[in-house]
Image 1 (cartoon, helix red, strand yellow):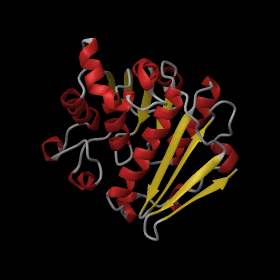
Image 2 (tube, rainbow, N blue to C red; image 1 turned 90 degrees about the horizontal axis):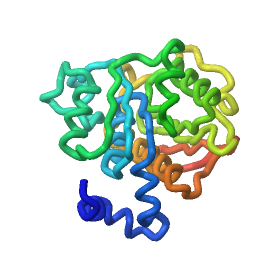
Image 3 (cartoon, rainbow, N blue to C red; image 1 turned 45 degrees about the horizontal axis):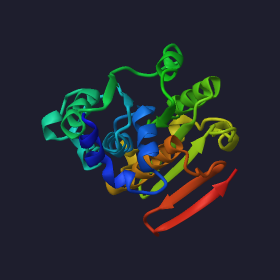
Amino acid sequence: MKKDNIFDRYSRQIFIEEIGVAGQRKIMDAKVLVVGAGGLGSPVVQYLAAAGIGKLGLVDFDRVEIHNLNRQIIHSEDNIHQAKTESATAYIRQHNSTIDFEPFQVKIDADNALAMLAPYHIIVDCCDNFTTRYLLNQTCLQLDKPLVYGSIYGFEGQLAVFNYQGSKNLLDIFPTPPDPEQVPNCDKNGVLGPLPGIIGSMMAMQVLKIVTGLPVDSNQLTLVNTFHWRFSKLLF
């Protein structure tokens, strides 16, 4: 993309005093890996791609199903039964074909996590199970990479930034994973569509703040209750 086109595309970010041309260059040099292309991953991918993240990786092994469509807004009816990474690739090509988008249709596990996370500067946890969450946390600690964490359920969501500039991590607030049989999930208990849009957008904002060197709150868990419309912070 020519310089003039770059400025035109990202001008509304560049006009922000705290971002400017230097900040946009940082965004375009950044490498971010998003794990999960579902309710949280959809808005994260949308806004990071729109901002011009230089290299954007996306990991997901699942396929699009019709019940995903109330919240997983990078996918459409035409994508049903497609791999979510394939659907996301089509979205990225239409919205911002200039970024380096790298889809991985695999499941992250103990055998591949280090190799997959190592090339990226920031990891974004948009997954839906605690096994993967704890693996991502452990791997980010090994690689000394920041981890942007989010989760959703019903009307409620959580958000935190772990392992950033010496800050605490997932184990400091949740030392042990819960019993999988006692963990609620969207498939069984449901979620109202805009909630992951809210939390995912907040996660994307935290990523962009990290990339551009803006202040990022750490050692705290942001709690969002959209039923009673309450926002609170839990320090840890």
